[in-house]
Amino acid sequence: MEPRWQTESFTASDGLRLAYVVDDFTDPWTKAPALLLVHAAMGSSRRFYAWVPHLAREFRVVRMDLRGHGESGIPGAQQLTLERLALDAVELLDRLGVERVHLAGSSAGAVIAQQVAIAHPARVATLALFASTPGLKHGKQDYGGWVRRIAAQGVAAFLRETAADRFDLSRVEAGFVNWFIGEAARSDPGLLARFVPLMASVDLSRQLANIRCPTLAVAPGADPIHTVDEYRVLQQRIPECELVIYEGMAHNITDAVPDRCAEELKRFLLTHTRPQ
Image 1 (cartoon, rainbow, N blue to C red):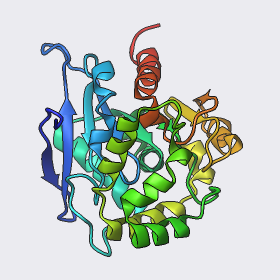
Image 2 (cartoon, rainbow, N blue to C red; image 1 turned 180 degrees about the horizontal axis):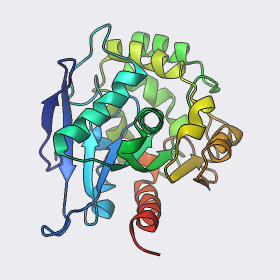
Image 3 (spheres, rainbow, N blue to C red; image 1 turned 180 degrees about the vertical axis):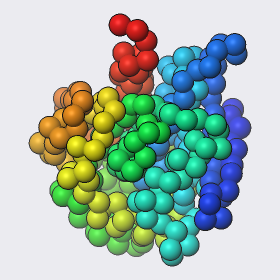
């Protein structure tokens, strides 16, 4: 059964159509704070479906499809940079009339979220980073090998072979793994051949001190892609950063334990949106 939500879209300043979903179950007579969720590579707004029930009663939840992902258009050769991906988030906020947003991202989406907080600090009230270091440049994976394998095998076969890097297969349902792979297989391999190397070139570690908003970093303790020390850089260099480690968990915590992640985020957000 397909999810029961309505995807909307707008045209970015460079002409590309970008899709998004708004989930808002807040009291109609209040002006609820907005929360923007940014998904990982090979993902879409759909991957946050389980987060919505935890968050949408107290926050106006916005889920965007990154350019080239989900229902958004595929960018041309000059339309895919980290700066452009960050600007997409800002232009979506403009469309929705949101001046400042609580911003949360997963993996590559959290790298983009960091760029938004660095380049557009006035627009970000809080920042939450799940399974994300300051960039993929120093990760342990062969990202070029990822691209070659995706081109040769397809996205679904690649993810099935590497599923154990993303989840503890003994702790997740087979149906979930099949759904996750099916969702990711909707990604365009040609786009991924550009998106993955772009993200693999990013290192924001020297700019982290420019993130001035309260920040939550949630790290998987058994991540095969990044070491825990790489995650600790966030806490060390962002002036106000809380680090939480999910011991024994592989990379895709936002998918494997969505309820835990959403409740972690809700706890953090309520701490910074309600009087103490």
